[in-house]
Image (cartoon, one colour):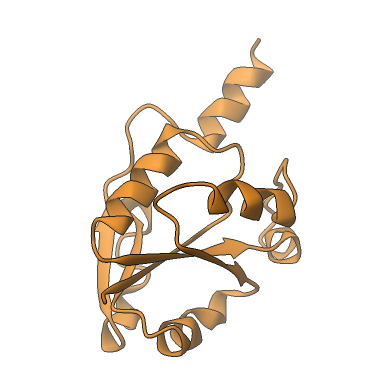
Length: 129
């Protein structure tokens, strides 16, 4: 079984998120999503509308997602890859090159972002209404 892992906040879920999760799942057989906790988002100065438990509930309902684990800090990725026997690490291409150090532990794949949609765009559009 080929295991894939990706990371994110997954707040204000949209079709770009779904496309990323679908394409990540297509890389292997089992998709793990490491979901940023509320505490970790605070450290990153990132504000989420939904709390961790609700974002986790939403992700677990998506057919491409097999497991959701908490992302508590930047440094846990190597440990997650080893602990969960991950074969492929997937992120959006806006992170291109930033996780190449993980190639020592697994394959690293950067997938193109879905054009025309992002959580930032949604927030900006709502402010202009």
